[in-house]
Image (cartoon, rainbow, N blue to C red; front, side, top):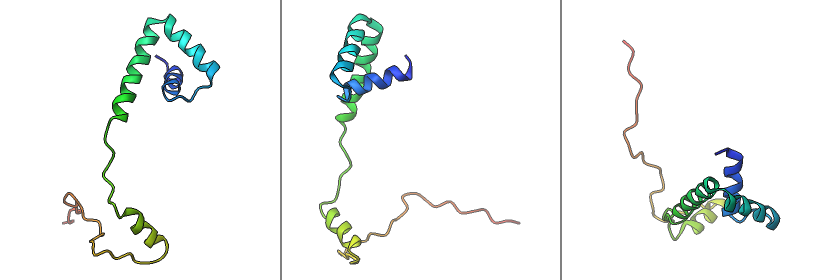
Length: 95
């Protein structure tokens, strides 16, 4: 398939096409088994992605961000300093 057609199919799935363009593309999908198969595959990917859970957001995130924006340190007693999750690579010493 060509990327431009994939973009149009994605736009159809996302409801981004105007009615006339959507109707024309649906006619093409109905007339072409290959295009219909590609449309169904893209729609399946879209449904799976939409079904994924988003990241957990702390309940006090908004208040902490607002405090930082307003210039308050927003100290909530939580350690907000980033900690590496893996060992940090250090340069090798030259001999």
